[in-house]
Image (cartoon, rainbow, N blue to C red; front, side, top):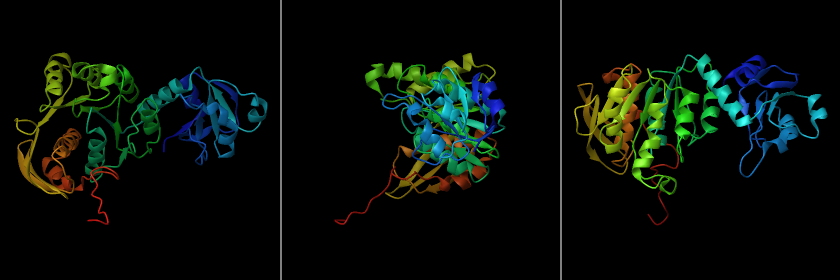
Amino acid sequence: MSRFHLDDLIEATSGTVISCHQELFDGVGSDTRQKLDHQLFVALKGDQFDAHQFLTKAQEQGAAGLLVHQLPKDIEELKSKITIVQVRDTLLALQDLANYQRNKSKAKIIGIAGSNGKTTSKEFCAALLSAFKNVHYSKGSFNNHWGVPFTLLAQPEDAEVSVVEMGMNHENELARLAEIAEPDIVVCTYVGVEHIEYFGNLENIAKAEEEIYNHSPSNSLRIYNLDNQYTRKMYEKAKEKFICSKFLTFSENQNTDVQLQIKSSSMTEIHVQGKIQNISGEAIVPVFGKHNLTNLMTAASVALALGISPQEIWQALPRCQTNWGRNQLVQTESG
């Protein structure tokens, strides 16, 4: 968990200190149904709930501080018990704090976007990379405008790599997430039909997904899937646009940095073979479904981008597995 001082919070958010009792925070929280020991409680306002209604509960749950954008009626009582910082907008402040802490961290940040496969690719990356490095990653599909900041702020101080999933359902959302996380390595796994009700067609979806590349730092290493027509077009444009950037590519059939095929498969595993930077190999991975080939190539490419050798990647690929509820076989009483 990322620890930070009150001075860090003020510098990151330009907030105003209303009261001061504790100055050191053990990360952030926003759910008063859970213990908030020594955390900064961020009073986010959503469509259904406004966390400003639960400030007293947050203090009772052990929070060390409250980040608010409006002051409650019982402010005087709270001022006597807990540190309170007021900002213009708590969501924006959460994002600014996450970016501030990200820039203090020495960890490599991996940004993963895509219409399909980003959660599984994140899980594969974390499993593969954990054989070599201290890895932090977002749990579940914690990938939106508040999930990404919380993921960054939950990063332990000794993390060497953070794998951050980034999702969107409207334009400009991935642009903002890329600005917050400033990923060192970035990949869009695949462009397909998602949130078509907001975009109208695949071309608009691809344009929104491309934001992850266009708004990451210019020197970020960019990874491209050449099997998808939309990400392949992104790669062709990127070679001219991001002259200072490094690139890696993956494909099932083309001559790329990572080239994998399925040799055989069953309901419990897939047997992959191919080349990783021209080093031939094969591995049996305990997942099923041809679609996972893209996710495995994503993970192998990320590992390669972090300097892990092809031989080590081949050895670690069997570590990849899906998380609970994804690609699980369930044995029923009927068989």
